[in-house]
Image 1 (tube, rainbow, N blue to C red):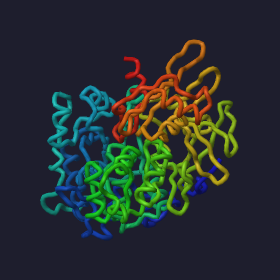
Image 2 (image 1 turned 180 degrees about the vertical axis):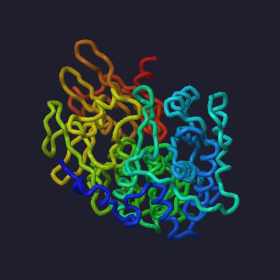
Image 3 (image 1 turned 90 degrees about the vertical axis):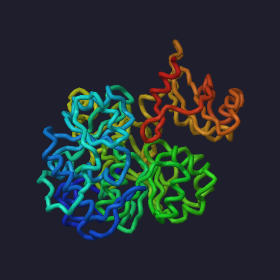
Image 4 (image 1 turned 135 degrees about the horizontal axis):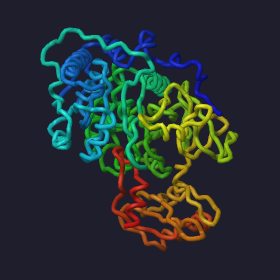
Length: 506
């Protein structure tokens, strides 16, 4: 077992956040932070920018609007990234309601399920997303109504307890119906403090916000952390050209993304000079292939750092830093977060031995919303959260993630982690990306099927088979290879293995 700091330190490990913010809710913490530098621009997109004072006024205007027009306890936020997004979320907390950020790509019936479960009667939308909820039993609140037209009288954030729910996020639903994850003020503030402390972030940072803010990674790293620091967050839709231009224009220092984004940046013809201002480039949301990490270093002359987290953990669990970086791992636990590895027999594993990664700390949710059965399975008897990921700790506390337990392939009694085979395939010069799944194979258990996105000229199955044979034991070599144009992906670009299995069977 390894702990970044003793769990008993709780919110005292909030890192570089002002002491006045300890013991207060998220909205109050942001309010106090933004008052320190009210005239500094902290939220920006291609159409608008807002100073700290304007963000406060937008939150106050939103809170007034929510209080008068939202009858339920929750507010749906159905928006793409934009400068008003943080105020849409924080304004709800300001008004004593719980914001529910939603994926604009969800279908009406998927949204309707969430609306009913989370008691959402009003949804904040823009012209692009209003059509998605047309016909559903909810009221629409245009996002531009949230912007303060004139200076509004001061409205202080509603009083809260640290363990009150601050935000309700929904998982992507890759294993069935999406599950609500209530994150408390304590969850979010402790995680923000741990991230700020570990990555040495500060108010002079310029952070690019391309991760969707309806996702825990994007909400924490491109909204909550910047506002608590009075740092600038610039929101944009991701394309390699646009990001390279924005890094140059804004002299960005922090860019957080998923592997698919960094893969496109490496392959882009532009951007080598632009990346010079970046102090931190952090990949999360999915496994970072070694070949991509090496390609990034070769192309830009800097390290691409890898971190690890889950919606249920607010989200960051561990991360590498420029000073403490062990490539191939996802870093060490944040302050206040504890990690242990439990074997299939229920016993705790020693450093170097694989098992399920389990988490405990102030960042961990107390349980899924309205899911008592799932909650029994989500936590151990002594209160540790089961991540469902296989991994191991080394003697220094660095975490290595090997893959999802449910994705484990068993063939003739041998256990194969798909990630190991994918790492080998992605070393082939004709392979851009690989995804490996298992399929039933009678008495032998499962057969290994490899899906491959080619870099340019597609490889033949025999080329891939021989390449795998040169680097893997025979029982790990895929039986079949399928060339694909791309993979089904989640909102952050993560490959959806379950969807590939469904795709394979059609």
